[in-house]
Every structure is written in C-alpha cells, then in structure tokens.
Length: 381
Ligand SMILES: [Zn+2]
Image (cartoon, rainbow, N blue to C red; front, side, top):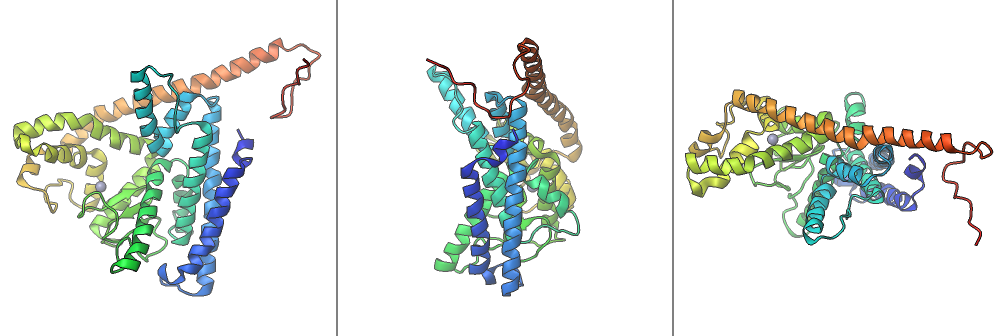
C-alpha cells in the first residue's frame, strides 16, 4: 500500500514532466500570468508550480492507494473509486460493464484498474497542483491550507474535470492568440482567491452561463465580490466540503429527474418544450444550484436572465427544493453507507480475519514475518 505510492517509474516520469513544465511555462509565458512579469516572479511561480505538483501527486496517490489497498484492490473498490474520485472512468466502465453483460462477456474494468487509478491520481493531483501554483491561486495566509489538500484528495472528481477545463482553455487561449483576438480562454489575473477564473469567453456548456468544475470557474466575466462570482465560488467549496457526495448527488439529481421532467413539461408547457423542462428540474431545481443561487442573492431563480414564463411554471420555490432534498439526500446517504460498508468495512474485516487465520495455521518453525514484497520461495522442479 505504501511502497506503491513511490515505486512506479511511470509516475516519477509524469512528475518529472510536470516539474519541467512548471518552469518552462512560467518562463516562456512570463508576461501572460498575473501583474508580476519580473524574472524573479516567473521563477517563484515555477517553484510554486513544481512544489504543488509534487505534493498534489503524492497526496492523491496516497489516498487512492490507501482506499484500494484497504479493500484488497478489489474490482468493485476500483469501480467505486473510479466513480467517486475521477468520475470519467466510473462512467466509461459502467458502459463497458453493461456491454459486457449484454454480450455475455466476462466483466472486466477497462479504466478502473488499480494501476490506472494510481496513474490518474498522479496526473490529476500533479496537474491540478502545477496549474494552481503557476496561477498562485491558493491563499497561504488563509484557507489555502485547507483548499489545496482537499482539492487533490477528497475533491478529486471535480478537479479531474477541472483539469480538462484548464487544458481546453489553455489550448484555446494559445490558438486565439495565434489566429484570433487573443481573448478566448483567458485566465483572470487576480491571485490568492483559492479558485481559478477563466474570463468570458472560455469553455462553457451554454454561452451565457459560467461553468465550474473543481477549483476551476470557466466562462465567468464577473470578478470577486460580484453576485455570479459568489455563486460559482460556492460550487468550488461545495465540491471541497462534500467531495464525491457533491459530484455524485449533483449527477444523481439530474438522472433522477430527467424522465419525470419530460412528463411535467409536457403537462405544463407542452411536448415541444420538454428539454426546457429538463433544464428547469435537473438544473434550476437542483439543491446544489438552489444553494448557490441563494448565495448569489436570487433564491427564487425566476428573475435570472434567460428564464422565461414557461420556466417559471416549472422552477420550484426554495421550500419545495428543500422538501424534495430531504428524502433524496437521505437515500443518497444510505446508499453511500451501504457501498462503503460492503466495499471497505466488510472487506477490511475479511482481510484481518484471513490474516489471523493464516497466522494461526502457520507452523511454528516458519518465521512469523517477512519483509514486504519478498518473493515466495522458488519451487524446485
Ligand atoms: Zn451553479
């Protein structure tokens, strides 16, 4: 469990690349970060990127190695970790399992193997740390000390998608500099706010909406202290505080309401508007959104730009959202307890029982402990 955090040459290779990248990017694009364009500033920025990338990868690998090892690297633990801490491998492997089930093939994970999961941890922890160091987002005389370790452990799922946002916005920005007006995908220049902000326009699901994943707020024009900024920043901290429960219940709420929303929309605003209904019930009525809109100063969510009279018929008042949240989150918590119990608590006890059993059966002449990782004695043929 502990050795494998350090003994993977590929992981060291990835870390080496991030280390070199941290300094290469900080020096090559010296004038494109915040207001400090001095050489000393660039070197310090590179150093912060290097240190946070190494720490981020180490923390992420430690957590994932521990979670998998505690469950004896079982396939189901890999599957749950794939969903809860990286999201994408969970989604992909669910599809893979369904196809394998339908075709009668023997079920095997495609992405959520222990080796792969440790590699994702290195990549996401390392990249998230590096980019955050380069942009100096963490406030080291404040909540940065809590925000950074949470971002590369408990809050990894959101930050996995956050890393993709960095990637797309970075590429878009360089392309926009080369071919366009150089403004698409531009990172905001404010520092030490414990979150990234990409200006509008940058990647978003809808042109007029900001899009936040992990510590990365994208397509957000408004700066700190603005209402929409506070909305998006709320999502950043929801992810840090609730980790996999935030990501999975956000997605779970959408999955639970999408079909009912089609019926509701058909009845209230007509069959041709069913996707508007899905937006209202899955997005505006989502408790995590209602919370963020409350912070933004519009808990009713009906006076937002783009919300139509049709939407108003389907957006619930806050008390309805709260009422539906109670059974929803009770069910989600019960499911989480069930999964954690069967994957980790039971298998942990089984492992202890197996070890105790094996220990009791060992002949007394055999040494009771071996160095970890020692090979079994060679067989003589
Ligand atoms: Zn939101």
